[in-house]
Each structure stands twice: as C-alpha cells, then as structure tokens.
Length: 182
Image (cartoon, rainbow, N blue to C red; front, top):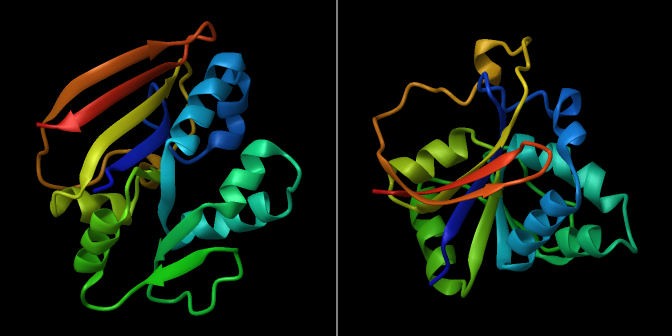
C-alpha cells in the first residue's frame, strides 16, 4: 500500500501561494536533492484542479530535463468535478460522490508514495478521512508580507495532531519539517 505524502512550501508567515515571490531564492543543491528524492520515491501524484492548471502548462512544456521528464511521465490523479478530458500524459480524473473511496483504492493499489504538492481542499478532504500519511512543510526563512487570508496554510478544519518525523536543514536556511498524523 502506498503512502500519501503532502509537500507544501511555506513562508514564516504562513504564505503557501505566492511562491514566485520567495521560493526560488532558497533553491540549491540540497533542495534539488530533496525534491528529486521525494519525486523519485513516488509512484504517482495526486492534486486538485488548481494545481493541475498550474503544473500542466509548466511541466508539459519542458522535455529532456530529468526532473521534468519524471513529472510528465509519472501517473497523475486530479480531483475535479470540472476537468473532463485532461491533456497531460498519464492523468486520470477523480470525481463523483465516492472521491474518498477512489483515493483509498488508488492508495491500496500503489506500491510507493503518492505525492501531493500544496495544501488545499483535496488535502483537507484527505486529512479528514485519514488518508494523509505524512506532511512535509518546506519552511522558507522569509516573511511574505503580502499574503491574503486565502493565501495562508490556515483553514477552518478539525484539529489534527502530528508527530515530528524528521527535520532537514539546508544551508539556505530553508527547513523541511516532516510530520505524520498522531
């Protein structure tokens, strides 16, 4: 059975949305190695429609790069009630009344990790139903200073406790915090 691993990039003030303004300043050899390890340790990606709409044009336009080729070739699942015919290679749509059960089946049929980028409604649905096995916060040492409430990690949801599984500190000051639901 696979594990669902959520990976979320975040600033010290909780911004998870405006990555173009702060994320790229903290990239380096260590973050590339960490990103490769989590992508290559996964058999699939799961995402919501907003992530699909951002990832598809960005990654499908790249070829010949090892990381991009992996993103394009890996099995992808999009939870969406509006996406009908995805153009991105190896993409299936999860929709209907039994989304949670469909995700459970995918998890049961997948050997290694199922990676999810970002923290939105799909993450909250999976957390509420006990489907997320690990949350990795890539904490960037910067205050965004411009995030609107909808840009923050915070959402109104039931309290969920976690156990710290690991801390990876990078020379850039970025820290990857790994947590499992308690």
